[in-house]
Length: 94
Image (cartoon, rainbow, N blue to C red; front, side):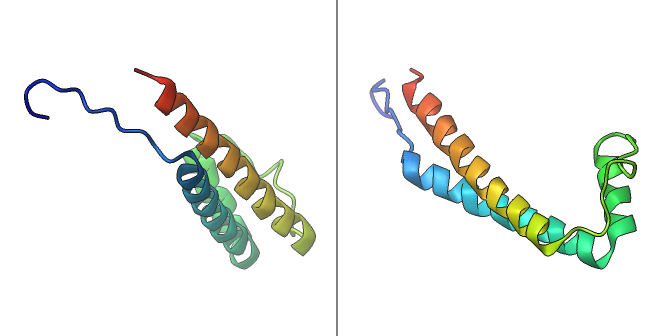
């Protein structure tokens, strides 16, 4: 910025929403694959992420293909909504 001019950068709302949707979908898909190939280890890792909370009692095993794919789709939709909302809020701030 030269001469004290304040540049205002706006985020492209659709691009941010799409990027977060894809990112969230990839993370969810990787999680689903890890649950399929190493359920006990994956549940243990997520227990550590949640500061030692025992999530094994609420983890259903095995995860059905339908539930796994539904979870990935829901994560993508939620990621898109959060990305859209984030960009809208960011752009509205001065």
